[in-house]
Length: 607
Image 1 (cartoon, rainbow, N blue to C red):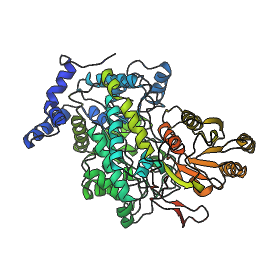
Image 2 (cartoon, helix red, strand yellow):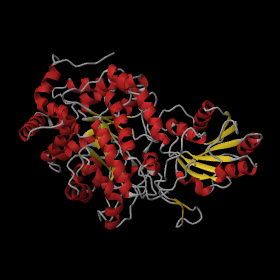
Image 3 (cartoon, rainbow, N blue to C red):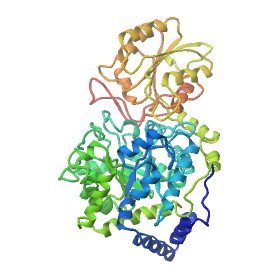
């Protein structure tokens, strides 16, 4: 069903009278100083008509369960009642006046592109039917690579570290533009990407391949390119996680990491990508739940730190766009203060959007109380709302808040978009080892392949699992393949099965996943190599696996196990594509991390 608003809808007409000029600016991309001042006054008048409850609501970006804004499945109604005290997205907007909603696959928001578009339209209709009609800014974590909420049939692009290996800013820009245009077609107008963290710690449990790499200048260039790509497609980009989450060994979902960088190190290592994002006109920046004593001696999480968010981000770096917190449900922001204090402290620190609190009623009422008792001035709240409304106006949401199935069909998962993803992925695949020129394998010479390895859960709704995807792609390229999943922690019995299955094969392809010192994956590779059958390992997540493996004849790194990367790896293995990727991070020796085994920029190709 198509959803088009008409000029005769009262709520829509009211909305247009408020911000017609702002919409014109969004369409033309420019405004005269007088016009800009007029737009600003319209937004300020809109704010002045809001009740305090409506103002507080505009600050929140909240999850909600269900595929529909008004008629979700009963299980989702039950989940909403339990967690939020409302039945539907429409009730969430009516009760709390939220300014933003975030989509998740686990909240069952993202079944298919038409359904997502209908959900977005239902949310906007609910918001525009209110006494003070304000469109909702719908957001998502669609980084691509290992973090994505919308899978097939939408186009899935290589993730950040893969793009870093490709080294092409134009590819990074193109990937973001394709991704952004598909999100916008489904009514999603704020994406929490690109990641601006510089991954200088190989043991980082939460960033890793979500980062473009370990070189601040290279990361800065990629971040700026993606900001341009997303925002030209009509989606607000969000660089994260300020002031930089790249050198942590703790996952802020489960604890509070401390970054021990000095101020000088922060300026040299962490700051450049955020500076580049700001210079590129980034629409929003997400905070990190990390402690950086050099930037704030009080050792508050950056999300709650006025010295970091106002002193450094706003004043020193000159950023005046939207600041959004990382999820307020994460443990890193909850370890020091209660859930009633966290949103208040975030606003006082300089945040504008409060993302996904664990209990919305607690957070919403705490902010309302803080304004009523004078801890936070209403003027301070208005300042954040004005930034949020400016962004909504820039994105054209006041002018055209709805999307259509026609636009979805013309945009999402089109053949040209899928072909672009395939070509970009080929340019990211990195060949680290090719002993004796084993690769490329020719189906005429080595037709029979065994594919074993880790079948990590699909990160993004792709078809998977990895071994089946690799085998399927190799079969299409003319090989005869046998598949034997061995998992991330293969047992002795499973390894014995793999060794037996290798008998008579011309080569074995092993998908490895974050190999550790004690991992059974090490035994799997060495036992297979001992059979004399040539072994090719494919690191399907972190490129560091090669440092802990022995006996293989060739090694590729794909940086993620999404279908687009695995298919590209298969084409490289078969010689249908040349490996062009270069390591964007160093691979250190497992027995001596101070020594580099493969440096940044390393990568082999075919003669």
